[in-house]
Image (cartoon, rainbow, N blue to C red):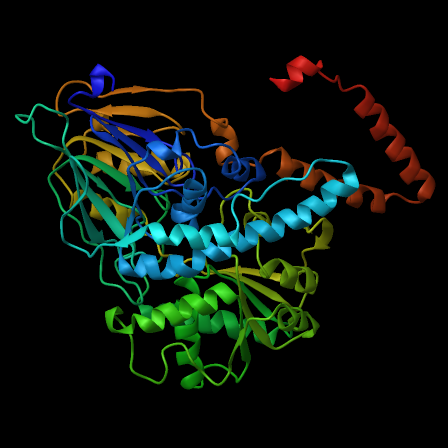
Length: 547
């Protein structure tokens, strides 16, 4: 252990720094190392490729992991961690453990399925086969490492590290993580007192009480997903009214209504609200298809935790209705694409980057009568963000699909606190004696939240916006030292379109340009011009390209 850590703690931001995915903090102290979260990167292909790369640490050196919640951008690399040598406990709440029981094996199955499809293409292209990040079986094995811990009670996670979990109000089982880490052998020094917010829920949310956490900390780590925007302040009843209007408009347009939804919490909120609307006859008797085996399993978990859910009205089954059909089998999912109108289809993933929603988009996006209703945040570079951004055509499974459907958005279903709620939550944690770190947000959102925190009394010199792979040495006195190492990916590629996005857009634009030509002769001429331009692009030497 280096001398600078004899009485200090080092934190390395391994994800969710300039982006909202890949949450992972590596904490190193005099007695060992541990992680807060170990999540998958999502969004652009360049960002997702980090999931396949080696960890920037030795997994066997990690003493334990503590999870803030079950969403895969916070938990999804735990099976890879175990696969590569981690043997310690993974601490989580009961709700998080129960959700991970289904979410992590489902994630492994998706990795296997996507790699099989990719390897078929690689075989045709003469490229080598690749391995999945982990398999369903490896994810099931990793579940044995999870140990349940309750809210509000301190426990010793490892030597010199005390942990307490607080309700974060984000999804079932979500927690903010309070830590007290002894600096070293000098017992005259008090522990370094930290709080990791995890994802903080809004002040009013179906199923959950408002977020809670302690004040009077040394260091505070705050998510900033919606740090640059305030949503319209709606009651749960008013939000249900907005959903009713969107569904009625979509059904009256004469096509299907597709809802890309995160399998955990968002889907259950939608089922609950749609069930009430159907029961009160505020909607016509449309059939609602839940086409996601994971969402179905997660719904069963929520039903098992019903006694812990708040804001639940006692009108019939929690998530059950005669108009609901839960789709498990792949052949039943494919049959939905033969339905041209009148169906409400809820399918994962919420950002349209994987899962069955992509097949339903292929079958419906080109229909002017169809509606795609987004109900959650879309990471830049994801298919959902591309559609929301107004693209005229997109590529799905290598095929070009025109976007003619009605594209709609409801942001009041977000499970994240908005700007004012984040400011309020942070102010309630004061005083923070040393520093506040803004993480889990894109750079514009973090910068805006920083300005609002300063306007509300936080000291500018104590607010940091860490970069990916940046290291901070946390002490109880003196200057806060930090260093920028060579990041695994350029900061500009984290939250903007990468070359894969540009390539897909280029192919779509090329098709449009060729179709716009008067005849085949003009198309041939245009392709020759493009070929000449490509030949003028210099190819770097092999050794330079390798760099």
